Image (tube, rainbow, N blue to C red; front, side):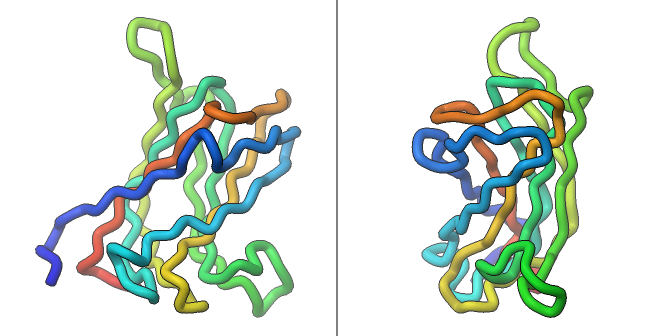
Length: 147
């Protein structure tokens, strides 16, 4: 049984996930496995989305209930999104990675009972982005307030 307010953190692997170069307005999909911690329905409430990236760009992260992602209306189960602007990206001592963080309130659940949360990372900048070890996304999920 989870404690009220306890956050669990889940991260993408920058060496193997979101490694495809993204042109302007292009997106990459990912099914992030969180079922071992949250069960096959992956229920909880997403409360923070953090990005660490090599480039300071405009990002959006979309969340879905199924692997249909941005499919037909009535399919795909859109849950919400976390937008990040260039001004949101900060560095320590004006060097190194850019850090972004956004507080959100998105109830999550996996409709296909696989324990996965389906995400789309979109590059909204005029520059191309991506490649191995270029971006990492971390999700803070409160498992006590399932969707």
